[in-house]
Amino acid sequence: MNYKILNFNVIGDERGKLVSLESFKNIPFDIKRVYYIYDTNAEPRGFHAHTRLEQVVVALAGSCEFELDDGKNKEIIKLNSPNVGLYIGVNIWRIMRNFSNNCRLMVLASDYYNESEYIRDYNEFLKVVK
Image (cartoon, rainbow, N blue to C red; front, side, top):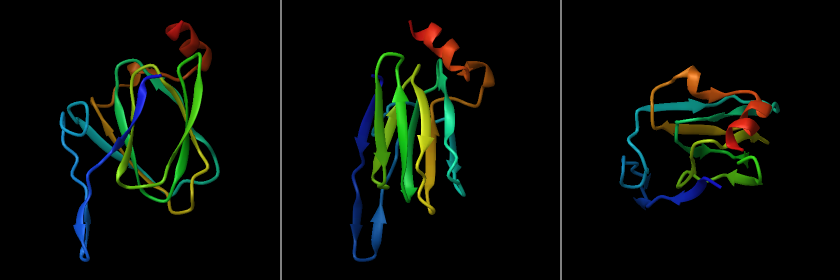
């Protein structure tokens, strides 16, 4: 399946911690867009795949689960640490759920927003990946 867990180097001392994210160093693509998700509720979200976009998701605070699906296999990944990123490659269906009350997700994307490269229908996704 086209995903991987990225463990980021943490620099810190008694004053606090810092994680640096850099294109083609610890992020496997050129970062063209950053967005964040917060104030979530109990409703799952996501329900889409991307045909060209790569992403790295970091739980800056709290936790949530990602259900990743390549059309053949499904895996559940829990994000709950700001020094761990979830790389999601192309053609991976994702559903996010079980958000903690204080969940804050930051998403780094390999390209600018382009609605035409989203697959929002699961049956269409299955046709694309077969």
